[in-house]
Image 1 (cartoon, rainbow, N blue to C red):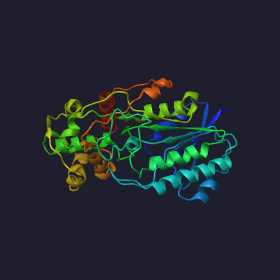
Image 2 (tube, helix red, strand yellow; image 1 turned 120 degrees about the vertical axis):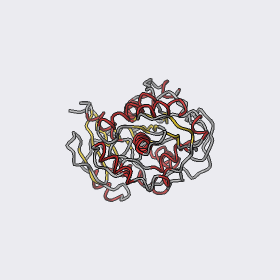
Image 3 (cartoon, rainbow, N blue to C red; image 1 turned 30 degrees about the vertical axis):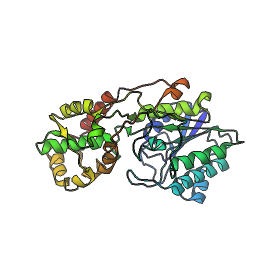
Length: 351
């Protein structure tokens, strides 16, 4: 019998995929996945359908899962790109989940909250780097502040502990998710090739030369489990990225070569607008190379790339706290990105 039961909230999102895969493959864990629309695929996970925005529904859905020991909160309210996200909505989702879990669970031990680089105000402009977990907050609103404040207050006097992870730009082979920098870059490269172009860099000149970081989804999952189970991580937040930094000016030529292209110039393009008329080009690519029949908007959410490539300043997190707490894994970001792009090609989603 499994020693621990994980509840993964937001179980079909970007963060949860590799986490569920990791936990479900470990006999020490049993897994309950919660989402509004659970997948039909047969996995060794008990799926629960519930809308975290509905407190009553959430409590009812969790009532029978009294064995929950660990909660991984990976959910998020609906949002656009680059702007301020709703504090009220995001805090309500977490509050409803905590209410339901505490009502049901007899032996709750830990709650893990996934945050992100917006904690430091990277969406607002240049900020102090390398960012450290105890850096001063920027002027609110910031829904991460509201969620962590709720979690800290709820934990006081309770028998469980909490932790929080702060990744930045989560990358993965995730064909079901168009809000993914990997598939966006790949679709942009494929369209450039089909149109007989060089691979111009579509972001700001400062973004091309700045230092930045990415987070592999599998590494994040392993780090989250470490944070949720290591006593050294109790009641703390942790930055977690691949452990290196990149400059797009160094990596972009390697991406171009992968697609048989010459690297072009830095040519800022608002991709959300510039790619509006490219569905016919994509349809031609799909037919020409026998790709999986997907629409372009099912492969690439261009507004996300505009947000990432619009950051014309360094984006770097200090990882010393995580290292001191015993998690030392690193990944070469360039190899990760090229490898994931190749996975999309092997799966016939990119040419």
